Image (cartoon, rainbow, N blue to C red):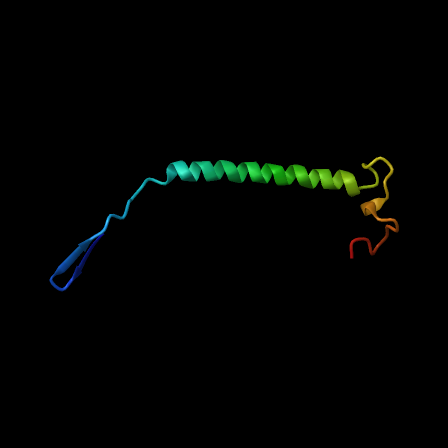
Length: 70
């Protein structure tokens, strides 16, 4: 970057680094976090669903019903 102010010239390196390696790493991180979130959601579904959780009450509540989780 070159800045001219009156008779004075200031030159500063802007870096201009290629960001693709960082972008690739963050894209793969995004995919991994998304996959972990999907796995966590499926685990929660198996835990709170009375048809899937092996006899535990719905929503793991002692009094499941319409107001569960409210």
